[in-house]
Length: 264
Ligand code: SAH
Image (tube, rainbow, N blue to C red; front, top):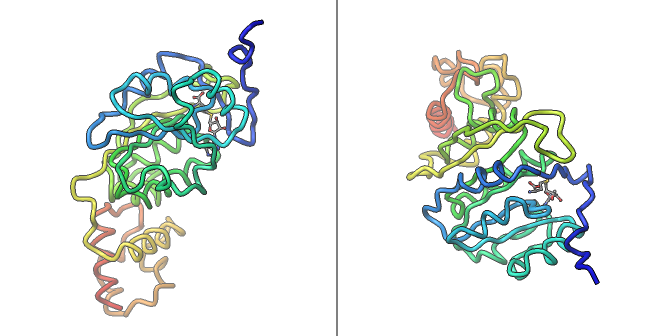
């Protein structure tokens, strides 16, 4: 009797964003992006058949995985016996991670499902008190956007909100041909390391609102795009309102939020 469970490969499902990495050295390089500083546990999102997981398991920390696809979960259970108790068969976006981590810090890593990549970043930002580090692979354009600085064409909501709390570093590019099936675009690996002081000195909810509203019309001055916030004429005369959102640094967005806070 052959151990057939080891042979069956998971069939890639498009609606789950499945592009399996088939290059061991890239998997190793992604696992090695973790600095292992400030946490003893890591959560891999979307392990699939475990190409990245096996390099995480060699590290001096506890690896948990969250995977929505039953077929992948069955594969992992059959092939990584020690991992079985730490496989969470759930949707990362919906699952309450504190059922597992109970307030403890953990890092996030993955070759992420590209169809939900922005939502993965937003959920990480919500849980930033517990997530000192985040690294992994996105569609290249998304990875670049997260890491870009003011003045860049791709600088936007994701860049500002992420970099308010994390130092973002674009690490390396991965071509389509190392995946099965190959995606249509290049991929990019990045790392976010939480800032030492990641509590911003303004109303955080208002900060999110200001950034999102400003970038809704990225070609206009923020005087124009922030009209909906009903600011006083006096405040709107401040020269910062002459700028377009893509010209503002993260700190300038924080200063702007402080001004608006005082105005209300
Ligand atoms: N890490 C593997 C698979 C990458 S493909 C590799 O590199 O080969 C993306 C993986 O994310 C798939 O296994 C897919 O099933 C999983 N996935 C997709 N949406 C998910 C979600 N909402 N929550 C958890 N996992 C998800």
